Length: 128
Image (tube, rainbow, N blue to C red; front, side, top):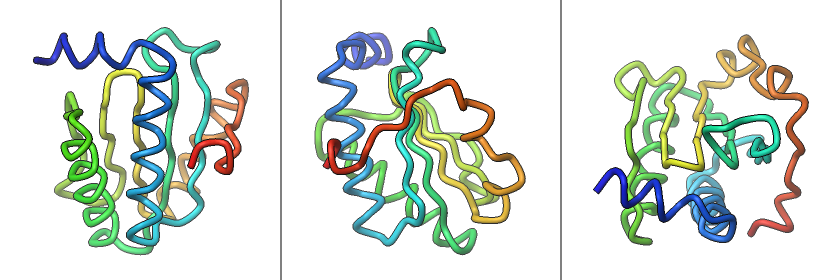
């Protein structure tokens, strides 16, 4: 199953569909500062990063639950989920889309958007 999902997500439109579903799920549960980075030109392992913040570790876990629920509803399943128990920085690996769900102060500390500043930002109006 893992290989089939990774292959299915490799095409651009499939990856963008996953991004749309993830963004919608994050908006549903009041995720903050949602950002989509197009990393395909600077990365070999992903097309997009979705970065979102929660106000508490419980909200981070709630965001994660909603993202996974939406992925499963749409027929995709995450390849792996890391960091859920602590609720500080959860990484949901969906193959060509990687979702970073941060507790707000942790996101500020790691400043992942600056680490990937060569990646283009995708306007959310073009995603949803």
